[in-house]
Length: 180
Image (cartoon, rainbow, N blue to C red):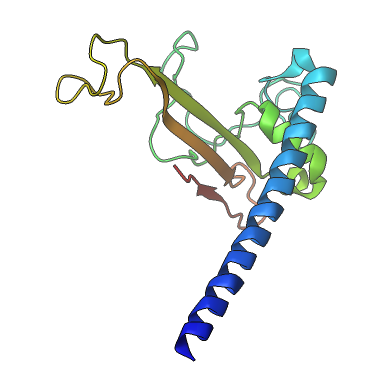
């Protein structure tokens, strides 16, 4: 009797795992198709900063390119790549001027509510290769254990919503999920 229960439990688990996998596969394919469609229609705008809202402009010029800033001025000149303090993100009183990457645009095309909620999806992959005279293992001489093969060192997908810390009307919220 317990053998039948165990095998039926395995079948139920296998069926649910397959259902979850197929659902994930559909979402992934939809995002990938949207990503390819986006790349074919807007190749010049990939990685550009997102448009600033009309309500979030500086006080001295209503049509300025930079959104308003409540924080202290930037401590270093703009010639440096990171001229602001790089502490915990987001910086309080500093507008979100991060670029909207192609993956985020593809997700926004599929789910427009995420654009309204300012949820961004992006990530990176870091491949590596080791060329070696060894044919089985590089241990202990190298970081790459398997010789002469391209491998994925790191793959990160980040989902985040940065709070709007420039406004003072209401309490805003944010999150960052980074599965590695």
